[in-house]
Length: 348
Image 1 (cartoon, one colour):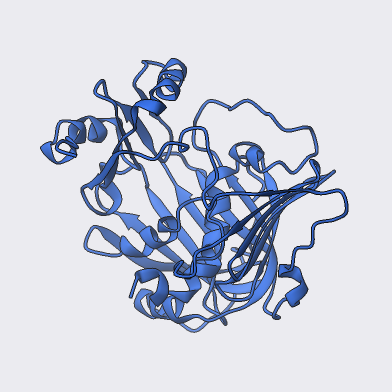
Image 2: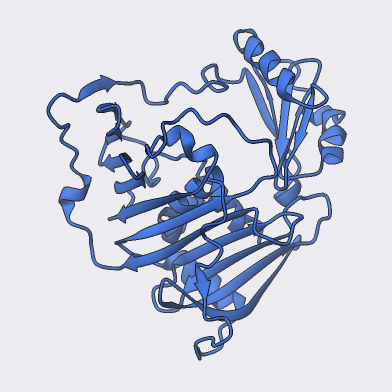
């Protein structure tokens, strides 16, 4: 049984974390409030909170404010002003609505001032809807798909990695109580002990009654969170099933798609891949096919030295032999891994 299956609360958390990966700005900075007058909650240990987190079973809906500042150069804004373009999640700040009724019924809506974009999973049906373009894409999920919360805008391993990191390499404490979205919460703090990681600390606010994450803040090397996602409003009432039934409005262009969308750097899957290291300092190493090399060269042109890029939470290294290394580690760690025989990706 996978860690994902054993931890139902993660299925609620991942859409929030996934959105947080991609959205910039500081709108969530005040989501955790009343720190000067914290709620009087009974003491709980980190082990007790982790056990409750792993066994929580919830359904509900809420509003999520997400932000991230990865310390990277701004990307071009290709969306029209006020439009809820999913491609705009790489910059700016956004508000999302989330509905959750088990791993097979999930809806995430990105709200713009003039439009809305939705990702909806209802059983095996996966819909992506863009109201500004009046266009919807539809995919049919395989029957044996693991019980993930619908389409992952970032890998589900993001949430798993936080819990997988609870090992000797991480200090885990309960620092204080507070309130998020008018809910009493405990704050679980994970501090990596390995100096090679760019992650300085992860803070998770856990609902005192339902034991689900209400807020996640990831700190890099700066004082402010580099990555944050927080509920500003939440309800634990089961959503109306109609929220998960998508009926294309009249005039909508419906496109039947393959399971995985074509993304600029992922349209051609890696020919080889491996992970070197463990925990916070693990590094993903992939070798892209020849058909993707033109895009790699375009990426090189955007990098200061043509081969590496480092932000507040991750670093990327392109090697001369066509490998791409990525991790939440220092550039020095990537260079070290690049010379490791375990990262050679030879003998396909």
